[in-house]
Image 1: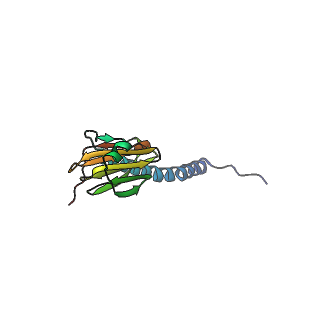
Image 2: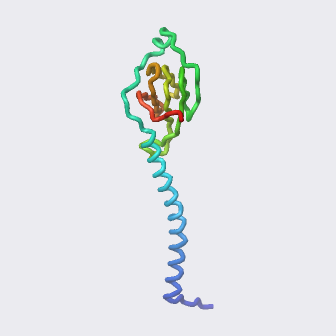
Image 3: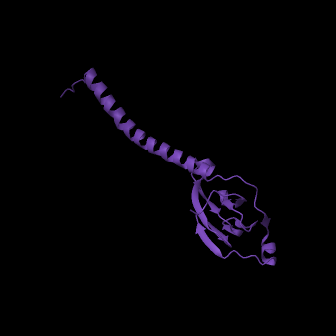
Length: 153
């Protein structure tokens, strides 16, 4: 039995259908990805706090000065301890919100003393009484600045 040749119109219709079948899922997923990425970048900017570095002490100085940070919270593969005040945290994507990895950023109202544990070690900060602070843990290393946007309402 001989096969019938397709007409030019049939070939165009098949090609258009195939293109649509490939383009629609790509458009749907691409739009969702781009929206999520834009939200991640905006969140990273919102939680990026500038300020002077927090005073740091060693583990030995922390113990010798009998400093205490009894209130602890585990968040995104890090544990944050504070002496006083309140805290709020958010997971932030690496590279300003565009990366695949996630790290923690925590803001404190007036912690006085802070201790942070990650997979890479332990850090001790002493912002002092009544001072706000923000700690970020990119690449499992704690960085603290003497500023925070967190306010109790």
